[in-house]
Amino acid sequence: MPEYVDAGCAYCPSTVRACREGEGDRRGPGFCPTKIEPDVIDRAVSRLDDPFLLRAARESTAVEGEGYCEWTRVEEIC
Image 1 (cartoon, one colour):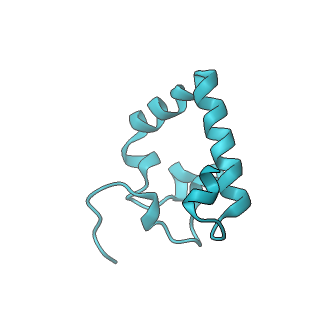
Image 2 (tube, helix red, strand yellow):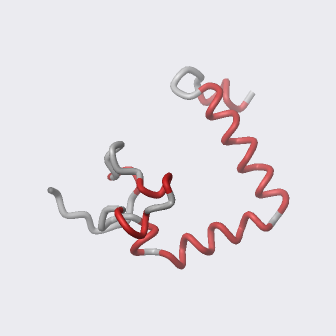
């Protein structure tokens, strides 16, 4: 297995994704941001206290979910 220097969700195999199950601290891989950068995760989550940022996150997630791997970036923006 390759050695990873930085945390990165992109490295996580689709068969693991322990954070989605709320098990990141127990069975997440060693490079999991929830394990090696908990303060960064906490700061990111605290930003959602801002109503504007929370709405922006929800809306962008909805747009991405609707056109994932089908729409171009321009279509997403429109």
